[in-house]
Length: 398
Image (cartoon, rainbow, N blue to C red; front, side):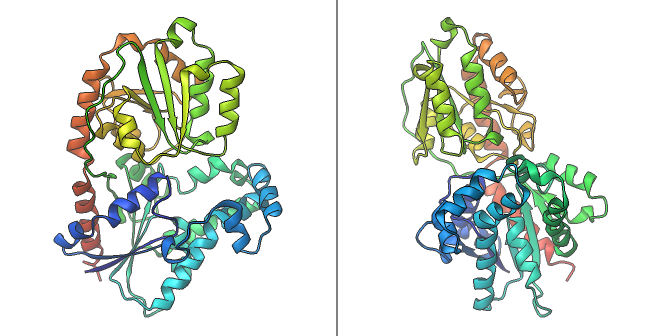
């Protein structure tokens, strides 16, 4: 069976979806063991030299000053939001599909993890193209949830209807749609009752094993790590706001390590500086040694407003860290409450309550339980096996 995976972003991007694509890319031999010959066509095939932001905009004929103007208004102006989305992902998806079409490759299944790429693929499909189309969405079951958080203005108005019409078109023409958590697939079925539920599936993300050297931790200070793009959706702001209100005697017992870059990083750093809490928090930027840093920490926290099945949590579980996160997307399926971690509210109050009660729990025991849960449910082999089964099932009803 021949499968083509289309992905319009870079495999090296520091995002969860790109990490999943990277793991799938590295699993070609595992797929072959399951009778699947998988081919990959990604943004690296279009622009080998990585370009982002205003530089990417200039390639599309948009001057830097105009891009910055769009960027500054994209949360409040619907037209700016659509332009920002097109520059950020739509144009690349359209170009990727166009270049792929020129290759005239034949596949039994075309496999995608982005709504935009799937939309352009289906819009350009010809009658003789009989490949089955499988789309995986990394949300809670709502196709636009993450975009609506980043671009609140798209929730209403005629431009909102224009934007969501792409999803309606995709749902009419795909063969199977998948999610990275069971709860997400059930939520999708609930809000899309006309879509054949037999063509809805879920498959947990998986990450490869990675052994790091033993590290020495400071028994006097609990190190708490957060990994992810620094943006409103990931909830790092809640951590900062909670730290500002902690009593000094408790601040001295913890240290927060934040890994990642993003749109609000400078703002949050300045907030910490203005409130004299930089001694208790480190902004580490994007890192290639995330596993090693996680192994040096005691607890992982991710107070997100929305997620699918975060790779950062899986990587923390792999290193034996207890998980503190929120009841969004598939996260409740990654945590056994009170045994491998806790679910909190995505708010300043939720984070503060957790920090105020650090002394009550055996975090080492929870971390060991977290590693066992990872081994049982979220291995790379389990993810490959799940997708291989979906590919084979998609061809049964030809």
